[in-house]
Every structure is written in structure tokens, then in C-alpha cells.
Amino acid sequence: MRYVRSVNTTRPEPTTPSSDTGRVVLLTTSHRVAPGLLSWPAWQALRAADRVLCADGAHPQLPYLREAGTAVDEAAPTAQELVDACAGGRTVVVVATGDGEPALTDGLARLAGSGRVRMPELELLPASYDLPGARLLDLVQVMDRIRLECPWSSRQTHQGLAKYGIEEAYELVEAIEDGDRDELREELGDVLLQVVFHARIAQEDPDAPFSIDDVAGGIVTKLIHRHPHVFGEETASTPEEVKEHWLRTKAVEKRRASVTDGIPLAQPGLALAAKLASRVRTAGLEVPLPQAQGIGYELLALAARAEAEGVDPESALRAAARAYRDAIRAVEERL
Image (tube, rainbow, N blue to C red; front, side):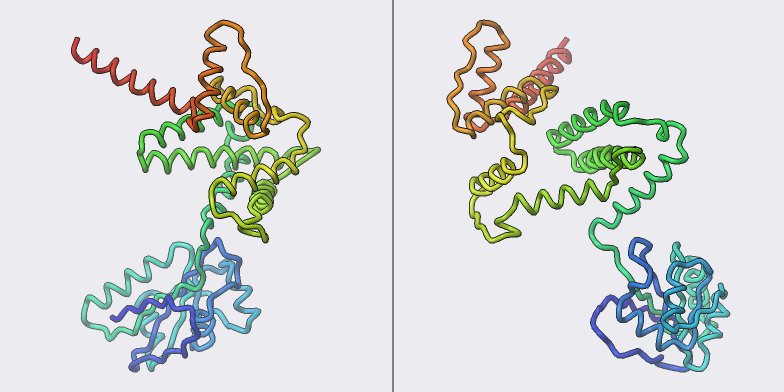
């Protein structure tokens, strides 16, 4: 049995069987793509087929195929029945169900391996493809179901989930610092879950609902607006020029009365101090540091100094703390 994989999206001429054994085309589609949006080779194969079969009468493609004039028989033939249907050089297209028809393809493989049957040509033809980010649709669907059916998830609120968002963010930072790629991928997924979960809860608000599409649409608009050197007519050739564009457009958007507006006071102390120092420096203000005595003010001065030198004091302290942890463990091992 000869297997041919069609991945070309150009307009090939319909293939005719090489012998009277015929041809089977297994047409696979992605459920993440709107039904009816098939590739040109897929439509060619459907129109040239002597018969089109589909085992699932509720397959989302069927209404669109029939509307386009393609007759589809709702049938689940065995491997032998499919081979018989191709006799005389006929072409049969099988519109695959969600699992890809493993029982049928396994049966065809067994027939071919027996050596007792003249096999038709078998072609696997992807009719639609997932675009980048398509699996996010799966995440939204799974979240919808969990929100409706899970006793714990269905009762969660923004306030109740807030602590998990903080935890997941810290675990992501730790994965980055450890350089563990598998852990990084997993922690990114956990952070993404928090975003989707909160958006799903927000969708139910009776007064001001919004969905994950509103969240995504908002950040898309923001990114485009803050990158005029990419999506507009301005130019930027250095990171500094990019940052200048970003800060300028952000200032217009926020229209803040103070450079301190929008700084979350609940963030870790060193990060807060560095953010305040950054805002002051960026705005070109001359604001002397408090001269009061105490460890807190000393830490404030160190954070401001680190920010001025391009060092993230929070990351620097975490790195030092990790080194201190390793030193503690080394001492413990010698005891």
C-alpha cells in the first residue's frame, strides 16, 4: 500500500488512481478552524471523488459540504468494504472524525500486511490546519466546562483567586531563574490559566461583564498603539528609542496627575522602591531621598542606586539569597 501525504496548498490537478485498485483519501480537519474553511486540494479531492463517506452524522463539516453540492454518505465501512468500494479505479474520500479513524487505518494496514489483497492508493490529506495560538481555543472551552461543572471552580471569585495569581507569578520567576525549560513551560501555563479563569468569572458579572476576547482585544490595541515604529510611521532603531515611544504613548493614554499614579503599593518593597525611583528619573524630576535614619531608608537608597545603575534590586537580592541558601546547605552537609 502506498501512502502519500498531501501538504501542498497550491492548485494541483486532481490525481487519478494509478491502477484499477482505486484510491482512498482520508480527509482530516481541525475542530479549531471554522467549518467549511478547507484547503483548495481538499475541495479538489471532494469534487473529484466517486464517493464521500463520513461515519459521524454530526460532523461539523457535513452541512457545509452538502451546501457546496458534495453528497456525503453517513457510513462507517470496514477496511475490506472500503477496498471493495475503490474497485474499478474509483476514488473514495473519507471525512475523518475527531480521532482520525484509527480503527479504519489499522484495518487497512492489516489488509496490506496480509499480502492477499490488492490495495488502493491511500492518501492522507489535511484539509484544514491549526493556526498559531489555536490551542488557546481549547483552553477557553475547557475553562467554560470547568466553571460550569466543577464544584470548586464554579464558586471561585476574583478575590478568592488573587493569592493564586501571586503564587503562580513567583513560581514562574523561579522557573526562569532555575533555567528549567520544562518547568518554565508548565509555569507559563499556570499563569495563563489565571488569566483565562479571571476572564471567565468576569464574563458572568451582571453589571460590567467582559470576556477573554475583550481582554485579548484590549492588549492587542494597546500593543499596536504603543509600537508606532512597528505599526505606524515612526521609526526606532534602538531599545532606548522603543522605550521612549512606549513611555510617550503610555503617558497620553493614562493622563496621570502624578508620576506615582498606577504604581501598585502591594508589590514587594524593593520592587516598589525601584519603580518609584524609575518614575522620578524618567520624568526628569529632582526628588531627594528621605534623610531619616533606619534600615528601611537605607534599603530605599540602595534600591534607588540599583535602579540608576540598571540593576533590578529585587532580582539582585533574590540571586544573593539563593547563593546564601546554597552556602547554608553546604555548611549543613559538613555537619
